[in-house]
Image (cartoon, rainbow, N blue to C red; front, side, top):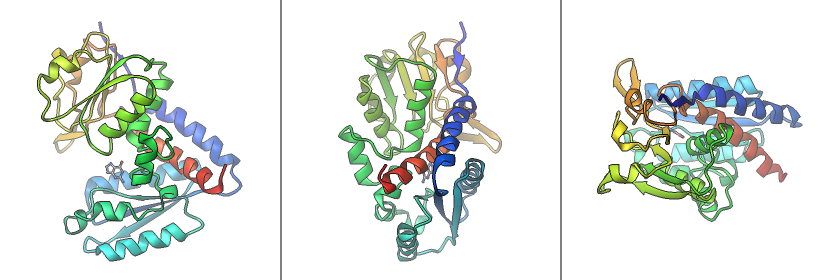
Length: 283
Ligand code: GUN
């Protein structure tokens, strides 16, 4: 039996349609500022994609491209200006930052006004998610949840296993699934008997950044497998954290890479711009 394939573009289109409807109702056009420091080629592609999607949905897009040698102080000044700008409702600093300022990433991200923090990385937004009062939630895990809901996949009472404990995916995913009454286990590089645990999962989320790490024998027959990994294994070849060709034969539903949850991330960012705007105007 072959799994149902959950294509990101189908769900992204639904999310974007709702965002466009919300933006059209607003009395002013919200604005998103994306700051990119240096010339990381992958980051440049992501930023262009965000800019294009803003244009598609009627959101003003401001891309602030800063040189590789930008200092921490210069970057903090740019964030301060955007925090104060009335035409900007969302601010995102594209990661990773250049090596020279990478060590200050937390201080830099924490400078963003939490109400404009459309990445959901500020400790205030992280804390709100943990206490069950989510405001701005990281886009990739929020997109996974949205996809499960749109696909009609039940979460309540299910065993969910997440492989990976990053601040961007693993940890927020834990809180989102737990808030929806799943029983959640988070596995990582020190976990013993990993396959034994993953085989119990009704919902398996792979987010540890290891190409084709999840093999068919690690999956319970009929499970929902969400692959958050994006690994470049050759100049033009992207694969996920799941061995898709084998997994598709055993899972009940599975997201492909490319073409899976990655496409939802940008759609959810646009949704967060709308949420941020509403938080700022108090509706
Ligand atoms: N780089 C890769 N993923 C992300 C993300 O979700 N947000 C930001 N700001 N940078 C990223």
